[in-house]
Length: 299
Image (tube, rainbow, N blue to C red; front, side, top):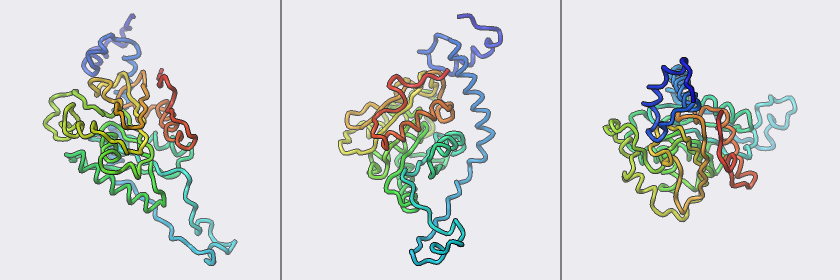
């Protein structure tokens, strides 16, 4: 192909960011890299808004049929307790050195398509152990179930967030609470990218052969959670790229290939949001597919 002069300044950056196996530079790759840079800039602006914990809705105390606020037609409309929605809550879990602000667009998309209970959880940027973070996630989910009246939740986890959620569901008995886990660019088999980051203990846990990755590879014959993993063929943080797929004989798992975008775009791009909604809705429809069998192609 012919690279225009306008795109030439991006060539060195693309070559540094993208894995060597993607050496064949293409217009799609350039577009994906430009999109990653734009998303990173926008996310840096939104990041401060997601530092503080999300404000939780105040639960409404249950009322009896004799309560005058219920039987009185002149009572305020919000006095009665709303019925529990049929769909379980959706829990959004961010990636490494990030916060809940990464899910602003996905949250809006889910809410516009009928998800009434969506919660974004922050874990500390100083978190140094995936197991500890998974235990904390479990306590949050117990609180969410108690507050909402649901027995299960769905989880969408980006990058490290997906690995924390998988560890909770697969190794800590969380499959009793997690109906569907959708992961976006999660290093399920470990990633070798950026070796200099090995100084951080949680990065070492995301390496191939770590004790955490080995635990996730052990038999899990009774795990009830359904897993859907979205992985991108232009994900610059997955090395090898297929590490973002779930390959486990005991898990009910589906891998959805996304073509045309990078790591940061996975929780942001509208086409991926459609695939996520399909994955979460598959349980209600009885389907066992997410998106299309041949994956998603983002122009």
